[in-house]
Amino acid sequence: MIVVTGATGNVGRPLTQALSEAGEQVTAVSRHAAAVPDGVRHVAADLGDVTELIGLAPALDGAKALFLLLSGDLHAPEARPADIIDLAAASGVRRVVLLSSQGVATRPLGPTRVAMRALEDALRESGLDWAVLRPGGFASNALAWAESVRTQGTVAAPFGDVGVPVIDPADIAEVAAACLLDDRHNGGVYELTGPEVITPRQQVEAIASALGSPVRFHELTRDEAKATMTPFVPAELADDTLDIISAPNPAELRISPDVERVLGRAPRPFNDWVARNVAAFR
View 1 (cartoon, rainbow, N blue to C red):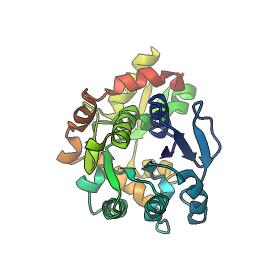
View 2 (tube, rainbow, N blue to C red):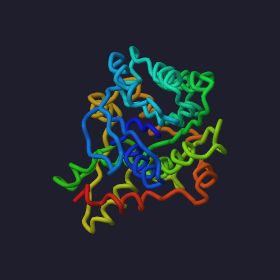
View 3 (cartoon, rainbow, N blue to C red):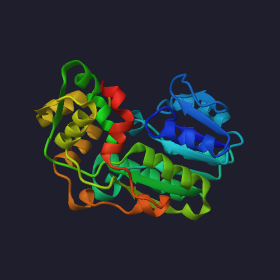
């Protein structure tokens, strides 16, 4: 049995589906009750609440592997995500695949990156089999624009002409499934990017093309962008993110070969993600 945390999100949902379709028994963990594929067990647990980790123990009972995805509140100073790894080991889990961040390597001194590096180190020292996934920006971040596109035909975002190679979450999910199921990936650290550098303005053009109608782009200042982010993520994480998307360094602009190394195919371009998700913008 494989446990997937963050199972209703942009990575966890397709990962849960892929593992189920591969014939694996899957336990899907999310903060709230949610629909899951037939045959998948669901457990509601808030991993950002230390007191609720006890509730995760039954989900891990009998599990051979765990996919660990950290929500924003697990980056908070009082959070103890390494406790989840300890709990997994105590429960008999043999393998953990951690969704980390590209910034651990490209911006190692950022506060949230230091914390994530510490978690990676805790996993390496746990005695478990492990793999670490370090994606860059997600194509699905564009879903934050969906309501304004539907209601106003407008996208507001910062740094309109600064691009990074965003990754399709479905590709992250496929790489995660491979790491959970295949011993060849033990000890692997995979940097995951899309196949091309694409700016926010170009992303909006791709959405408009898929819709067949114009979408206006309004550029936010950094302060305006941070104000839209901090209701949902810690301020330090917002600053780390804005540092990257405002001035990506050469490592953050690099197209990684790791998706193709693992899956035997190139990563999907942003246009493919838009085609599959265009209904969200209508």
